[in-house]
Length: 150
Length: 271
Image (cartoon, rainbow over all chains, first blue to last red; front, side):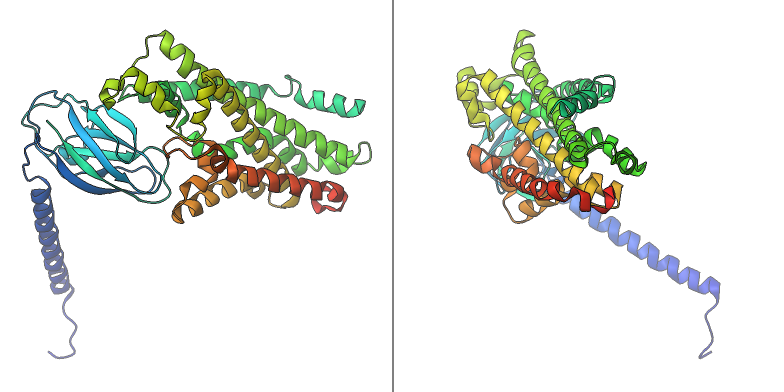
């Protein structure tokens, strides 16, 4: 009937349906993003990256690669680090969630390069290099270069 | 002059100042413990990297706040107790405030000189003596000689390493000690000028943080006060450019005190 308020059970059902639709959308987007990030790139060739390290020494990550050889050190070549900042770098797995198998290298500057010592197993996917500005940064800092897991 | 010396030595006596002495030791040990834990996850190209990482602790971010809490709390308490008001009839106000200012500055200088120099001694003397753990220039595609040469251009002030590690360590420790003294002088002045004592203790930190953030947002982090004191993690600039922000602050602090001193008797906080 026009002007009649819908019952509270009906409203709850509608709200639940909307929430479910939102959840499905978020899940689909997340899957798509992880799928793109996790695309297997063999780790023996240098791959370019461009990332941003957020304010307050939070890490910024490269795109992912699949590790080829167990314990083999990776390599990173820095093209630019924004402003006059320097960056630390660590090889991490799980798209940057776990960095315990990587050894951190410090204070890489424009044009700098380093190996990336680690103890990860060959065949591990979703490997990234995680960059953290070497000092407390009050502004986000862009970092570009290339890297490989090996 | 004799009264000045007597009051200052009383203010500085270890019995009254055991807290700063204990704090200095805890600060150094804490920094070294923090640094040693950090070194387990990383590899360094040279001993300057070790030194920089030891000093890159959260303390760098709150340095002036630590200085103020360490050196200005006695004055903070005495202002709260209105001790100065009751003392004015027995002691010259300028003498009293002068002793407070100088003792706070000397303590800040001593604590932070010791902090930096002890950390330097561990990085440049103790670390090599125990076999330079986690120092491996080959990881950075460098020879040992390259890594030593690289340290001269690693960060602002590190060019002083050309005069030898000891000259660098001593000069840099003096610099951080002087900055500690400057921030204690700002904290002391703020306590005399502001009615809100807690805010006054925060003034050195607020100046330090805001100036650093504004410089970074303007794209010139090297002009930040934080990096003027602790330049690790930024590319090298000349000593004078790196020191400039702090030198301006020191000059402004000195001018403020020269203007404040003759007017002490007019201050509401001391009336």
